[in-house]
Length: 276
DNA sequence: GTTAATACCTGTTCGC
DNA sequence: TGCGAACAGGTATTAA
Image (tube, rainbow, N blue to C red; front, side, top):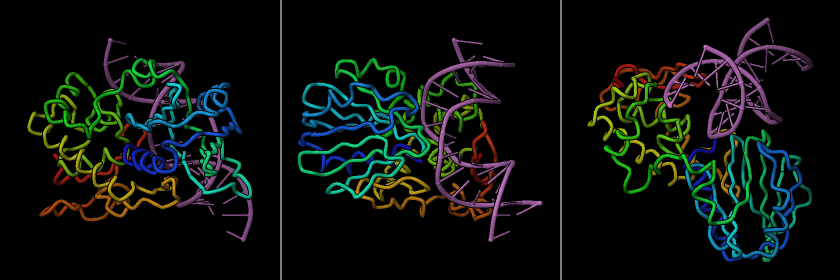
């Protein structure tokens, strides 16, 4: 599932083959993703040189020389793959194709079609409805205990649900929420308002740690995520609790076992011995 | 206004 | 073995 580390991995994988290249052909083969692909996508991107590829939360922003920005979200099952030349055939879920002046082919493939593509002028990025309400970037220098504590203030919801709220912290999904809470030894069903300043500092550090280490190994390849090169990510081998029900808790000195519960219709994995 | 539940979608896994 | 049900989950929408 593409959360922040997977999206960042994709962004980094797209930079070498795309940055500075000209898009010679853009083809939307299936327009009905979570929201319709803008009908003028090809017209506004073809002939344009890619000037920057950024990330905000789980969104990728591709800037072109005209000043337009393509916004991309991978949803749950989306992947971007690059091949050096034209493939023999396209997959039925290859929804958008980009061909560069170097001849490489970028494919946006998304079987479940929870992903989306939008297009806007660069001046409209900050005010875009999907971007304007996002919370702080957890890997920014400014994200720390006080920052997290401020974001959690007044949230009358379990801390796990608060971490999934993109207006609280941007980019955390179901896997890394469980991982960070276990690393910080905070119970997922605690009310967000009950998290102390010291705990918020611990949790902010745990979030940074988990995300940074996941990016370093290319993210988690659960069912869908691969890097643009086709390589897998390997962080799933380092999961502490996610999808490890019954396994020993990895916290040093803790003798608990990983348990699973459902919060807001989502699986949460945790240890009820060391997570308090 | 805030929070919880549901819909969207399809490939995979599970149980009978 | 084969079938259908359940499950996975990010975000928008609807309900409470």
